[in-house]
Image (tube, rainbow, N blue to C red; front, side, top):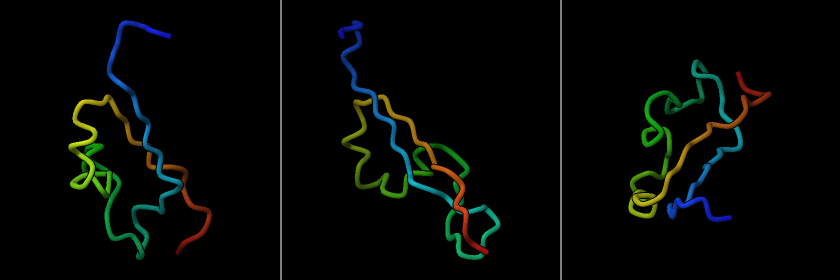
Length: 64
């Protein structure tokens, strides 16, 4: 279906995340989508001309 928008749209979904106060959490999921995407430096040139969003996934049912 052509809606007149030639840009692709991606939704990048992480499978899960642990609580922000977890002792095993080495980075926080707050901030911009670029900060949340762990591989941003490696893929940012691929995403430059794409509309994309990032979803941190569901809260893990295990942890501390």
